[in-house]
Structures are given as C-alpha cells and as structure tokens.
Amino acid sequence: MDNGLIALGAAVVGVAGTLLATLLSQRMLSRLQAAQFEREQQVAHTSWVREQELADLARRRECYTAANAAYRRYRIALMYFLWVVHREQVEPQERAAVEEARNAHHAAFAEAQMIASAAVLVELDLMTKRMAGAYSRTMRLAEGTPEPRGSFEEIHAELIALTVRWEGMRGAMRTDLGVAG
Image 1 (cartoon, helix red, strand yellow):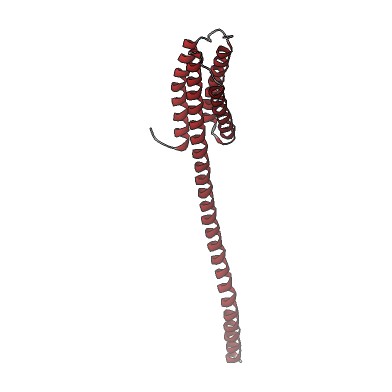
Image 2 (cartoon, helix red, strand yellow):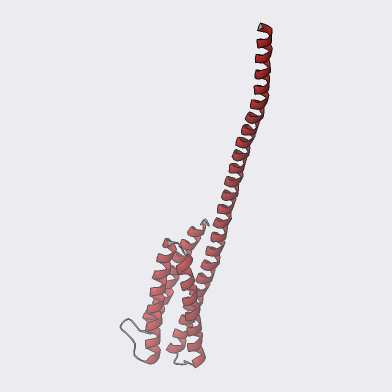
C-alpha cells in the first residue's frame, strides 16, 4: 500500500503542479502585460505633455511676434502723426493710419493678455499705458488743446523713450520663450 500511496501522492503533485503552472504563468503574463501597458501609457502621456508644451510655445511665439509688430507699428504711426501735427499738415488719412495702428495694437494686446506670462504682461501693461498717454497727448495737441507735458518736444521725447521700454518688453518676451541674449 505504500507504493500505491506514493503513486497517488506523485499523481496528485503532478496534476497540481500542472494546474498551478498554468495559473502561475497566466498570472505572471498578466502582470507583465499590465506593467507594459502602464509603461506605454506613461510614454504616451509624456509625449502628449511635450506636444502641448511645444504647441503652447508656438502659440506664445506667434502672439509675441504679433504684439511686438503691433507695438512698433503703433509707435511709428504715432510718431509720424506727431510730426504731421507739428508741421500743421494733418489730413484725415494720417489720422486714420494712427487709428488703424492703434486698433491693431489693441487686438494684439487683447490676445497677449490671454496667452502671455505674468512677466511679459507686466511689460505689456507698462508699454500700453505709456502708449495711451502719448496718444492722448498727441491727439490733444492735434486738436489745439495740449495738456501739461503735451508739447511736441515732450511727446517726441516720450515716444523716443518708448524704444527703451519696447526693448525691455521684447527682452521679457524672449526670456519667456527661452531665447538667449
């Protein structure tokens, strides 16, 4: 009977081993697949985050380029209009050119307010306030009712000084975009 029990025990162990091997291999395969799936998800997420960062960078670059160009155009148009006022040769098309540049500036500034970083917004706000002041004084001078600090020379000096402010704004934009120098 001892041989019969040994044979029965060996058969039970053999069958149990066969059944357990299948279960264990399935379980190991399941764990490996779960780990692989998790790695793939992590890679996909990392890739998505990187794509979003690149898209955000491109959006900011386009916005900053448009804002930069609009500020320059507005300042140049305002400076030209100031010269026309100084020469007392104001025509409706000169006034319309300033208004067009001003409206383009407002549109670019509005977009930048939604996209720009806090540091860039500080520069944009300062530049916009200074431009608005120069515009107001220039228009009052054109109407013949200049404000204090509203002479041709003072407004011209302020518009020239805005070049330095513009360089600070441009520097903040470049820093935000990660452009050196």
